[in-house]
Length: 366
Picture (tube, rainbow, N blue to C red):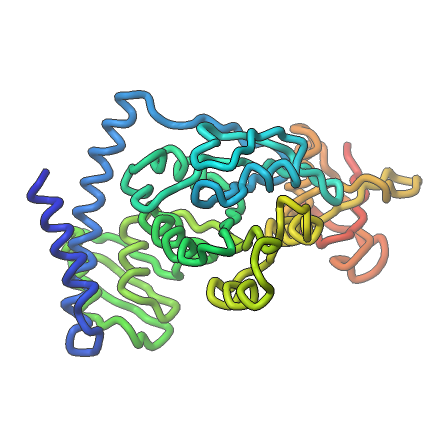
């Protein structure tokens, strides 16, 4: 155990202090692959121990989306939760007030969005320090993460992003367009539709061998890094949208607020204590969750334009049927659509038609 930790520390040092160029690219890629394998074994041992001790949070997802407020202790998560929802999370002016997950429901544009206030994280949380193991288990199932920062501590942003990466969460990223298919013989065959600027065939093969893969067909459709290729091989990464929100702007001069916003690339500046710009945050959450409104209409009747059905962008008519009733797909005959996704009002469509925000849908069932 101690030997593995020493090797992890040694590899981290080598990666951090190696100058990246074409000559060192291959060696650094190998270091990263070895580090990933060691961490994987370390995490497996930690997970087995946690399971044996019965650790973790059980949070049932409800509503049209789940948002988790993530931040250091005392950044104002509980106050913000109370602003966004009808929850009553205990608020105090000292650290570690929240010792469990506090759920609330944010109602906005007819959507019911679950918002979770989790215990504040600290540096080293991804490795299990504090309540990190339990907190990141909740984050992996979130539809959106709100990174909440104290305007007086912008350095927290880098730490939170680093901890997310350490917990296998890739904020605001998409899975790399890479396919790896293991074969029984023939060595490693690499196909590329884009020129790779940060990764060579030699490094790809060496990384595969580090993962005990000696025969495989690899297809790469975008310019990726060694980190992204290792992510694909590990297959345990969670890609979650995130927004960065700076809190307590009422307690700092405008010049500092502007400087911090630029440094952390803030999506929004708020004051939860003063309820400042909370409506803007609700709108941002709604947009980032990629929610759309679909209005339902019965044949020969006017559509209900008061209460829409909340769906995810890219939803099909089939998905709407599944949400409305378990038998609707089997009973479906056809539908008519008015709105942006229709070529003309009342266009006849079938189950795989993709709906857009504001569409009116009329279902015809057997």
